[in-house]
Length: 431
Image (cartoon, rainbow, N blue to C red; front, side, top):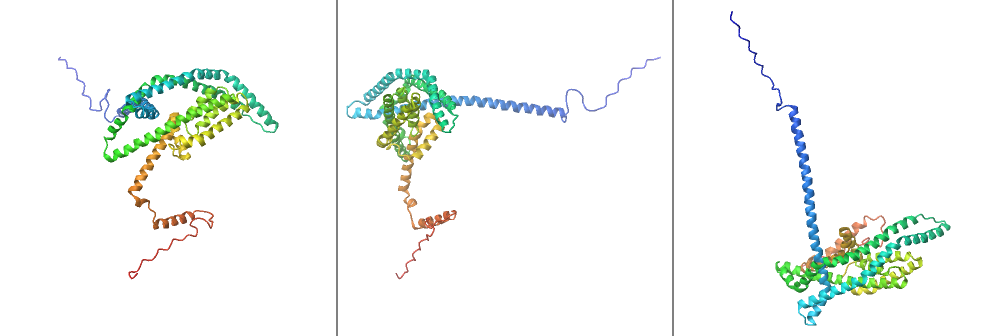
């Protein structure tokens, strides 16, 4: 009997594939693609943030490098403003060559500065250390004096609880001020080494400044070159004169403050002189800050000395405001006090102490350029600034319009009973 062959398995019916691969419409595949896109977006965001931060660091370093160069150029320009009168006088009167006149001016200026630093640095650092050491006793003495005043006021029914607040603020303010003075002196000594680049730039500006200026102006068309030439002249006259005048005022006020406080017996008169001289460089608010330093030091001894110190600085302010400023500074700073104050606040917000130093001369320089531009505009278009008959009629209409917004109208208000002037009739052909 023959064996029957084994039966083969029937082929599987066609259907959806099973295994690791998914169909295109599978929900698992869609979630996988969405997750991959989200991770790609997160990685792109992180990479963008990292590259932005690196770019910010590079940009910050570039700005710092550019700012250091700009500061060196500004210091060189200030040296030029201070030295150009002596260089021109030596070249014109002493018949010295320009190079030797510039070298002699720089050597004399650096010698005087080094002598001043050598004379003041030792006593000033000693006074600063002594002030820092005596700060606790000063604060306790001031606390006792304020407590006595508070007790007297309590006897009259007036209660104050600000003694601890005042003394805590003063105890933190005086060491900060002392550290500022000491760090300022040490920083000035270090700045003498870092100022080599500024001195070299000042030498070339003083020696070849006229040639550099002519070459720079010649790069522009005639009209632009004329405006640029006037702008450079205005900068040299206004800003240069202001820098020289302000430095002279700072030296005079600092000397008067130091000498006056030394005669009155205020502690640390050199600290007062330095603070008054430095803060005098800031218009309007600087003298009050310098006087406040002297007042705080005077309060550590007695209220009577503080009163005499206030009288001293009021006298210095009178001498400065009515004798020195009108004759020295006013011709370079032709600004209204409101504009000066606004420029000062803008400078402080923009650049701190350095912004406060440059804000007022910059505002004065911009004012000169605006006045020159308006003068040229008036000369070129006089018809725009002429007042005609129609302008007076328009003024009357405008006043009537504004008067309609008032709650109470007085009879004497401008334009209340005004009528437009009658227009004369045209002349007849027969005359």
